[in-house]
Image 1 (cartoon, rainbow, N blue to C red):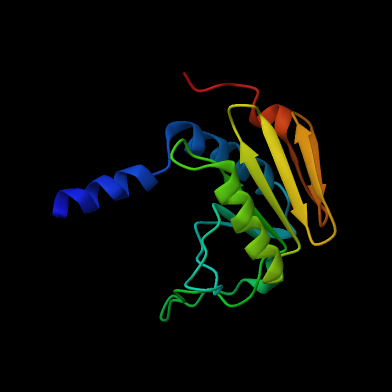
Image 2: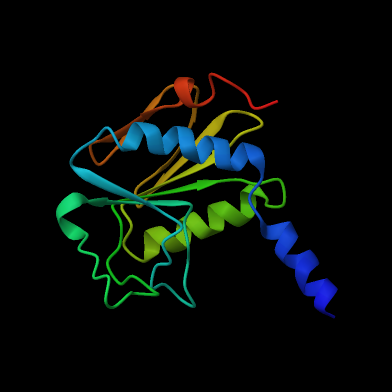
Length: 151
């Protein structure tokens, strides 16, 4: 039974392309001094939802190194999800809808194979390819993100 649990964990582990794309996005987000992009932060939604990257206004983040928070109650203005090979677009678009319902202003769901960015807000859903995507005064140039492919 222990092996089955390990197999399940292996299926959910992010891939090389997933990690590479998250890194390229974070490099651009870190240039914006008004925001704090936090990877793998569990949000207090349902049993806990964990976007790949949650972006908050800088003034909203105040870590206390004596007391950690396992489920963060404040919602980010933007959440980013990168699809791994073990996930489907349908699963992550459902997660995007949950995040929007909980108060996240925008969710970007990135599909690396087609170099697509699905943008979900409370008022619309849009699809972008290899260009600049912007929501809540936060932008990422996906032509740069997808410019070099991991081999």
